[in-house]
Each structure stands twice: as structure tokens, then as C-alpha cells.
Amino acid sequence: MRSLRTGLSLASLVTGLALLLAAPAAHAADTPLRDLAAAKGKVIGTAVTGSKLTGAYGDIAGAQFSSLTPGNAMKWGTVEPAQGTFDWTEADQIVAFAQAHNQQVRGHTLVWHNQNPSWLTNGSWTPAQLSGLLQNHISTEVGRYKGKIASWDVVNEPFNEDGTYRPTLWYDGLGADYIANALTWAHAADPAAKLYINDYNVEGVNAKSTALYNLVKSLKARGVPIDGVGLQAHLILGQVPSTLQQNIQRFADLGVDVAITELDIRMALPADSAKLAQQKADFTSVVAACVAVTRCVNVTVWGFTDSDSWVPGTFPGYGAATPYDENYAPKPAYYGISGALGGTTPTPPPPAGACQAAYSVTSQWNTGFTGQVTISCSGASLSSWKANWTFGAGQQITQAWNATCTQSGTVVSCANASYNGSVPDGGSVTFGFNGSWSGSNPVPVVTLG
Ligand code: G3I
Image 1 (cartoon, helix red, strand yellow):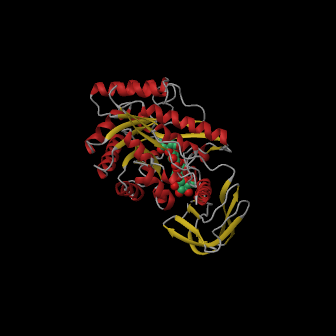
Image 2 (image 1 turned 45 degrees about the vertical axis):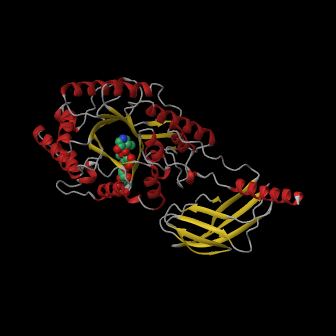
Image 3 (image 1 turned 180 degrees about the vertical axis):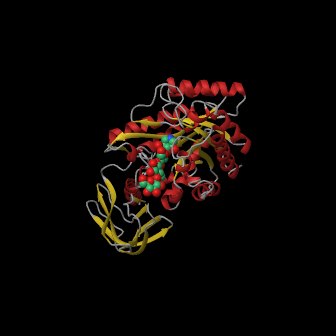
């Protein structure tokens, strides 16, 4: 009896061990970034593209982040491509998505020297006309979204690297007071919105950030409505400024909020594990610097997935700058953010002696494809299995064999058939399926559970 009981518990221990080894890294069970941030009194955001807010992209944007910034949808060139002709489609879509997911919106951006419509940049305007156009633009856009936008990047990138004003349509035509006027007009259109000046290369203490500091100080002294500064933080691997926290603190001490508004950390491609580990450390230190200063209210990444980042297009040979890879799998950088927000380090991936699943597309045609998953064990075994994944581009399973597959939204779960649940040590089992796809058919990460 005794030996039977011992035998039984040993057997279940071995089965349990095999299941444990087969367990995925379990990021689905991790606390979402937005909940971790909320517990620290912070908001965590991402820039988004409106047309992508479905499938896995929409699921992650909605679940992980408490703030959205339209990457391009609210820029002047997008919303008023011809004078007097407005297109709010993408901006409205993002605002509606944010409301449905209980998220803030950072409006971006009202006054900039880039992405303006050609009718504006090619026109020849008197200062009075230019000022009228700007006031009208701000009143129209801020007024349209009154009560729906938590913060506006009112003025974007007003400084040169040496701290002088950047010569732009606005500075050249209206002088430095275009900044104070823009803030005043935005405040009149939505008194509750927090109004920011946003710039890049102002993360550390330097000539440019000091010019921004002096501007904010003088605007406050004049009673101009300025609520915050945005530090964009388009950073390079291993180059987080050592004075970041000190710089955030000096702005906070002026009596304004601070937001990290466009965080990404680019690396020379290809990425490797050492670079990804450095990137995790860099994301950790940026988020930790914000967490350390009470008035640092928001950290926003400029796109959460490497498939939706501006970096490769602008810096050829560089990329991998965001916390999720191109297939929407969280990278070490993601865990850098979650760790700095107080999250626990996830279960490490199973060691070499374990069971693993490999997904491949065996054939593909215009609207369909055949895929297969092979589950193989080495140093472990399984008596039953379930293979789980999330499709990243709207793929849909239509038929499966050698497994029972169910799909709910983007999430697929395939369980063994009655005859192939057992995968011995050193053995493998393969099942197959047909699916539909359009646009792209990226390979998902399969986990066993
Ligand atoms: O929409 C057109 C599309 O119709 C066309 O086929 C395609 C061909 O090039 O271009 C598309 O427009 C692109 C647009 O992004 C939307 O994808 C523009 O070429 C491209 O220049 C534009 O880049 C944007 C960039 O600002 C412009 O300066 C990036 O997406 C956007 O992420 C980036 O964001 C800025 C912030 O607003 C301010 N701080 C810096 C940051 C990075 O540059």
C-alpha cells in the first residue's frame, strides 16, 4: 500500500514536472502594463495607427496601454489636406477606440514644422493671415475633441540643438510668441486639457533642454497656460542620458508635469540577445526615471511593435526599437518596462530538456494556407497537450487534422486528438490545419499548455 502510494505520487510528480517544463513563458498571465502603471500613479501609452486597431494589434493596444497617441492622424496635413476640407476619420477612430477601452488620448500635434498641408506651406501669408490660420486650426481641432483629449502636444519641436529657436513657418512669420499664442488659443478651446510643449534631444540636461526649461519658466511667469513638457526620447541603444531623472526633476520643480512622449530605443540590425538585453536595461532606466519623479505622469512608446515603427524607414540599418517584435511577441524590453513599473519577472522559458512546439507554413496560395505544428520532447514527455497561439494578421483556421482546434478572435487553441496525446521523451507529434489569410501571414509563437 505504502509503495503503491509512493509510486502514484512519483508518477504524478513526473507528469506534473513534464507539464511544468512544457508550460509557456506565460506572458498572457502577466499583469498588463496599464495596471502596473496605475498602481504607481502613472499612465502608460503608445502611439498608434488607426487602421491597425483590430486583431492582435488592437488587442495589445487596448489591453496593455492606458493612453493612445495618434502617430499621424491628428497632424495638420492629415486633418485638413485641402484648405477648408477636413478629414477626421482616423482621428475619430482612435478617439472612439480609446473611449471604448477606457484610455486617455494625447493629442499630437497642433503646431509643427513637419507634416503640414502643402496649401499651407506653399501659400504666401501676411503675419495676420498666418496667425489667423493658426488660431483657426487650433480652435477647430481642439474644439472638436473638447473633453476627449487628456493632453495636447500643442507645440512640437520648437528648438534647434543649440537652444536657439528653430526657423520655421511659425517662428519666421510670427516670432517666438507663436508659442504663447498657440497655448492660449488651445486653452480657450478646451480649458480642461493639459497643454504641453514637446521636443526631442531634451531628455538629458543640455543646451536644448535648458532653452526649453527657460521658455517654460518664462511662460509660467507670464501666466501663459502651460501644463507640461514632453520629452520625446527617441534614443539609441546604450545611450540613455545619465541626467534624465535630474532633468525630469528640474521641470517638475518649475510646477509642470513631465511626460516621456515618444519612447523608442533603436539598435543596429540585426538584433541579438546581447543588444536586446541592453535594450531591456535602457527601457528599465527610462521608465524608472519617470517612476522616481511624482510629476512625471506618462510614459508613451512610439509604436509598441517593431512592425509599426518609424525607425527603419528613417534610419536605414537600424530598428527593433519597440517593446514587441514584428509578430507581437513581447521582447526583453517589454519586461524592462514592466519591471520598472513593479511587475515581477516572468517565468523563464523552459530549459533545453523539455517539450517544444514549432509552427510552420507548408504551403500558401492567394487566400489560403496549410500549416503544421510539431510538438517534440527531449528530456521530458507529455500524456496530453494543447498548443496555443495568437494570429497576428487576421488569419483564420478553417479545418484541422490530428488535433481539435478552436479559434476565438485571434486566439487559437489546439488540443490533442484521442490517439496522439502522448509524446514520449525523444518523440514528436505533428498536426496540421488549413487557414485563410490576407495581407500578410506572419508566423505566430506557439506555446504549450
Ligand atoms: O500616408 C502615406 C502613404 O499614403 C504613402 O504611400 C507613404 C509612402 O511614403 O507615405 C505615407 O505617409 C507617411 C506617414 O508617416 C504615414 O505612414 C510619410 O511618408 C512619413 O514621412 C510619415 O512619417 C511620420 C513622421 O513622423 C513624419 O515626420 C511617422 O509615421 C511618425 O511616426 C513620425 O512621428 C514623429 C512625431 O510626430 C514627432 N517626433 C518625431 C517622430 C518621429 O519622426
